[in-house]
Image 1: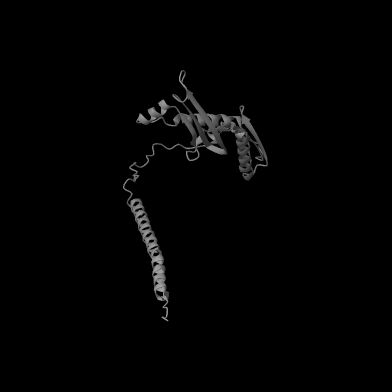
Image 2 (image 1 turned 60 degrees about the vertical axis):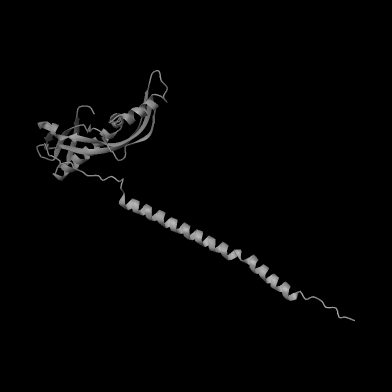
Length: 239
């Protein structure tokens, strides 16, 4: 009886399985290598962009340089002041200036500007207007009567750093006109209106009466230091 031989598949199967496993795991290192190359390329591009931007900002080929070629200030005159700055008021006003065309809508022709104006107004007493008999002294030189003028208001002094255009709306024609004009519309009208409104506010306030009180206190302190015990302050005219 012949012996039946059984085929042995173990060595052949193990080798095939090993080759299949190796071939299945081969793409993993290539994939990681590709991501590393892409990351390195992106990093190089980032360095180039940052370097180019830093170089551009350092060279600044389109930058402007401000050169002040103005001459020195010239002193034209000197005037002696004989007044006492008695009080200062700080004011702020919002100017709402609107310009409309009669037969065109605002989107075509017209403008509206909101301007914030801030400035100060000084109240002073002018001693140069004192008459010769402004001081009346008693025979024993212990009492004195002083006749002072009322305080006056100086012109408003707008602060350019605190005054600015808050909002502005312009029609198409106004925008084109300002774009084509060699000297666009300035803000002088806004400053004039702001000064006028601040002057009116200062007149309506108690700034002048406060200045009168301060001038009176200053005069009384000065006369007391000169030895007067009785001091009477009178005012010339209406406030």
